[in-house]
Image (cartoon, rainbow, N blue to C red; front, side, top):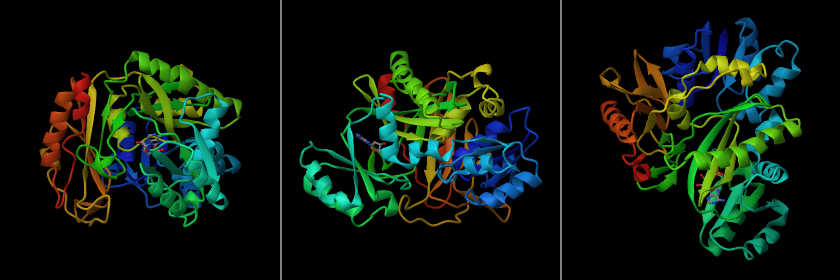
Length: 427
Ligand code: AMP
């Protein structure tokens, strides 16, 4: 098969790496890709939002399947664009329709969907810009901490948690009136605070049947001990030791089955990944958020644990035959440590030479923000390299990833040395 993969991060390098293991793969292109994806296939300089450019490329290269990595093209309706175009509607595409993508594109839509299908989630109320006084009045009726969420996509920054009422009022005004997150915060969801431990569960669905992929825990804050500002993700561990059989059974019964049934009942065309962010509250799962694609860096920990032919699974998704394929999972533990640029998640410099790749042993190296330059590889983003190790125990996987995180080097390199250590207490 000829495959076009959209995206440019560590998630896409992990996808590309996995796809190259499939005997079904004829040729892989990645748009726009990075220096890592270029090892697995051919990068093409097309933006993931340039639907017309993508169409031309798909037709002239006889692409059989398009795999969409990030959320933006999905929220912008790339699936609908393909289906509505007679020249494209025979091409398989992995990713939900625009309406399905609203599970990520609108927090209010996601909350209402969960309420319609009795999926456990925090109680909420949604307010529009013109109702700021009502929203402030509502804050006075609930207990702290206050969870305020911009309704739309805000590059992972749209959630603010305040412990103080005055601070919450100012924040709410900033979001609703001053449009702190642009149009995304012209609507704000105010939510009950949930106290517990977080994890992410990933589901692949053809809209009717589903497969549960390995779960993962990620590390969002820049600083050790979960301190400092949020990032795109500093590391991930899979499996998650506190997600035992009993808990995962509850997740399947209370969250996954009603989600897939809900999509079907509402005639939402959904062929792709559902990323379910969960809070484990005293052993019971509550949904914090849906994403309509795989996570980054969770993908770098999850995909190495999938033993089955990934391309075969994605083709089965597109053909609505997912129930016919077998998903085999590696029992070992994957530990992913992200190397980031100095200053990230604030301003950072690019174009720093990356060295040491050839000295890495026993780990997978996924490129996140890199570019090829003059025969070498340079940094090209805040998150630069994800180092993943797959070992029999979490301790071994962490040790291996940290060893190789030291070996790969670039000026200003930073990484969290406590990734996964909190989970050792559950083993
Ligand atoms: P989201 O973008 O919805 O995943 O929210 C970002 C982060 O905010 C989550 O990963 C949680 O750590 C936190 N968060 C979101 N909603 C809640 C909630 N209702 N209670 C406690 N923490 C939350």
